[in-house]
Length: 528
Image (cartoon, rainbow, N blue to C red):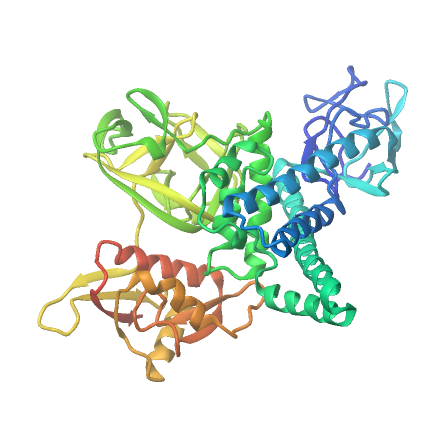
């Protein structure tokens, strides 16, 4: 066997291209052969008792059903509240999941392994090889692939779920279009009905991936859908699809990732845990970070002595982020944190976005834990942080990973007097070269470098400035002036730049000005 190949064991994962979930390999029949501490699988281990939730075309069908129901209500002139429309979508999705579950369960008996290895006989049957063997579901005519790590399986399933979400959205659009078309056909004939379908498609093309447009204001039911488990990601999906700063491509990717994480949270997968909030070590034990209040007492580390000390919380911070770093530790723990958060590595506080797999983090008991995998995902999240008296750190997750309570903001802010502006914010070309260049060029072309904070108009400004500017793969649309300034919006300069550069600079400027109210006049300065 080639050196880069390995036997299939219970440490590996299976990913079905039509499934909404991935599964860890289970050895049902082979109970004696062990490789690297894990039971070795053979051709009899077809995972018959494990369900991948086969969506396939069901996602499109569910979307079409939901679209037809909504269109039918509209044709009957029935007033429907936003929560009811959300319930229609949720019901259609749950129906698809239920059918997909039963479909996969009934088809499990048709699974059989192809390309086994005749060189390894395990309990009288041929063994299986990673990157060679595949589990064939003959009923669906698909090949279920082997993935070596949880990370690979999650990312692969994420991309499959992007397709499922897109199929649902297209089905929904088609359902609404067909419903409108049917109503028009009944009154005006088929030609008018065809025109009606095209009009609906054209009018809704920009929102066809956006079930949230039906929600209106988020009601208790929309939020309550979060408890339904499988599609309890509705609040996350709502946040993603209503975020004006993300392109459709980014929204699709983020939506798929959100769905994968939500599925595993709901199913309670054995290797991971997704609590309601990041767990913080306090004098009262582990509590969710969102429940921390001023006066709460948390465990910290005295950097001078290394001693663990209880210290009170002095201030609470809450904000929204567009991206998260997901870490998998070698003990199986998986958690998320904002890219700029700092961790202690080899005695140095470093931003997690600059830390790599195989590096070690410090735990509350003094031990070290190794990062197994680390990656950046697009995800709209409300994130929490707090200030601590004396020691600027605390411990998170059940394992107690040491994390700094602040970050190094690369945008420098300074109060000034005797000028038309009251605040100066400086960003460096070395930190954000593409954003800095864009701002410089925009100012040189006549755009202002003195701007006024007006956060309430940000959404409208962004929509105005980006209107007609097409997205490009793997690039963000950067605006100057930024949408948070009154001068943003119509006539703003827009340039496609690297997402990390754009979002880093935007976060740095936004955080630097977070304590300044609307109406504050700011001068932006670019430094070397």
